[in-house]
Amino acid sequence: MNLKYIYVLAITAIFYTSCKKDLGNYSYSPPSAPVVEGVKDVNFPALTGDTLVIQPKVSLDGADPLKDLSFEWRIFVLEELKDIVYTGYPLKMLYGLGPGERPSTLIVTDKRNGLIYKFKFKVTGTTQFSTGTVVLSSDGGVAKLSFVKPDNTVLPNIYQNLNNQSLASNPVQLYYSKPLPFQLLSKEEYWVLCNDPTKGSTVVDANTLLHKDNFKSQFFLPPSVVSPGRIEPVMGTISNGVINNKLYIGISSTAPFAPDYGKFANEQNGDYQLSNFFTHGSSFYFGFDNKAKAFVIFGGDGSYLGTTYLVKETSIFNPKAIGLQNLIFMKAGESGTSYAYFKEADGNTYELKFSYKLTGTDKEIIPEHKRLFKGSSSVNADSKWVRNNLNVFYFSSNDKIWRYNPVNESLTELVANFNGKKVTMLKISEDGNTLTAGTNGFVYVLDVTVGKDGNITKTISGIPGDAVDVVVR
Image (cartoon, rainbow, N blue to C red; front, side, top):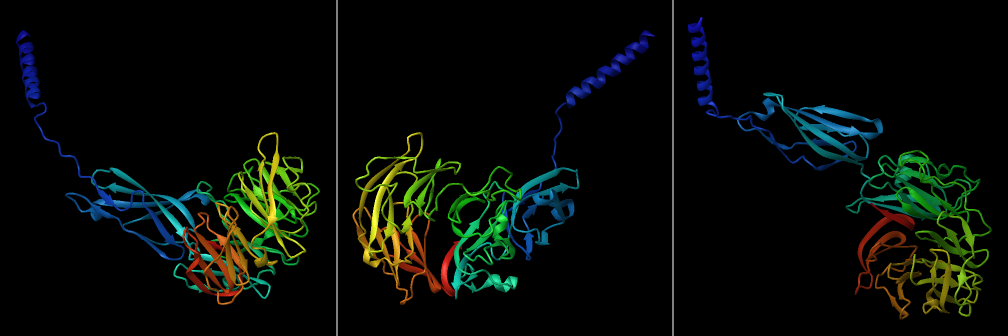
């Protein structure tokens, strides 16, 4: 019995010492990992109706990547809340998932050991109309929509050619309702705004230029006649503006992708006829009442406050009874000095300078001067006006464009030559360095950076009729 016990202890000691001597006395060779280049964090453009090919460089040390790896491509379609799955290498598909950014994942599986590797990327669907310039023009009074490709190729009257129907008459504005980056699935549209009581305005899909609806669909309770004045963006698909001479504000109380997001509720009530030249500040709206011939204010929620503000000095002019009738341009800032221009029955154009304090409890307007505008003789009843962020103004006079600085009353004729054609459109870029002008049949881009006097840097021809408005994407 004791002898058996001694044998067991001896055998155990031998195994123990053997294991202890062998501990760590070996080499470990981990399996090679696949190296995938050219896909992680990449955003791949995909033209709708065209073939999308994604072919990253793949290597696998000591093995054949195409034999020993499997590839699965998952593209998330948010509007359907599901992944579209493709397998194999490379990814090759006819892209038909529509425009917009799609979060995607490449899943690589090592068949030798079952290890899985994931690589995140994005696919952004586009159409042939996702990049370029859309031009609204008036051809014999009828609205026409044309598209200019990045290579300057013009597709004239593209809306009618695609939809086999014409737009309304008397076009006034082309408004781009676009989503913010975080507003997935929200609407992306063009509003072709026309003062046509019979046919009305049209909502167009921004990515296909196909007809979506009548502009009345933008209202919860549309008025019988919709006469657009001027629409401006607040953020993305939220807008506000003057319609039927009243202030309208888009609703943002629903999710950005909800059908009612951005729609107009009722007009902001009050006894006023609001001019198209209004300003939306952080907590107020400011404009000119064509009925009372006075500056009027609204609360941040759009509630009409009229002339319930203080006036610092009425001897210069009285903002509550200006005494001038026909406002032709005003783009007041949220703060600082602002200007307004009136062309009166005596043929003269007058310039008002003022500032205001409309935040807080004590709201006040401060008149600063009233004088004859230096460029009065060049102003026409239908002159087009824009203002940059430095309070420098540009206005048209038949086939000429003038630049005006009210600080020193500097008045300069731009050098751009429009071959005798009347300027029918002016737009200024956000940075103030580029002026876009339109005439009959043409759109021009002018350089108005510091030291430049408006030389033409780009010409687009083949526009049907008079240019009215443009949107560049």
